[in-house]
Image 1: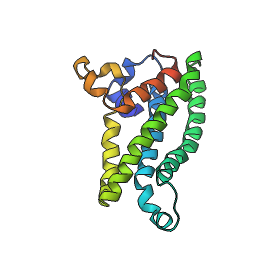
Image 2 (image 1 turned 120 degrees about the vertical axis):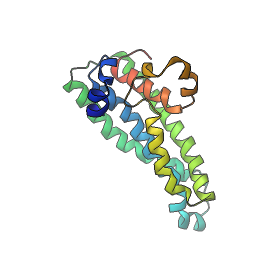
Image 3 (image 1 turned 30 degrees about the vertical axis):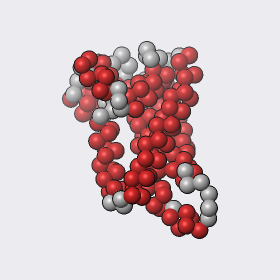
Image 4 (image 1 turned 45 degrees about the horizontal axis):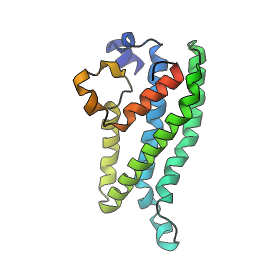
Length: 179
């Protein structure tokens, strides 16, 4: 992202912080979300032996798949703080809002992951489309570019993407930019 979007694409001039920090703050939220919905989407199919033998609420399986990604998120967040220190970006009181935006990412991941798990159960071939769909969704989310680059007439349509608010919130909480 730093080389292609930051330097070649000129996105670095649209942000107030070093571009690698800006991009990684967005990737922090996106990586958790993409991993959680990918794991949750195939969780029911991959746990079919357990589901057929023991009775328990089936919703626990996609929920646990989304919860597993929080461990990866914790490691990635540690790296984020190293990056913030390396580039000299100070922390603000807005960092206290990070758990709120993480909770929003978890809720969005559980919702989308549960829907995808149901679609994969209904049509097993959908799991092969899942990776491609997640990749397209990445480019429809403000990872490599700030929200201000999107033309104003598209903001209402763009707001339908649940990750727009989550990624912007992560950046605001981590970088001290306006929420």
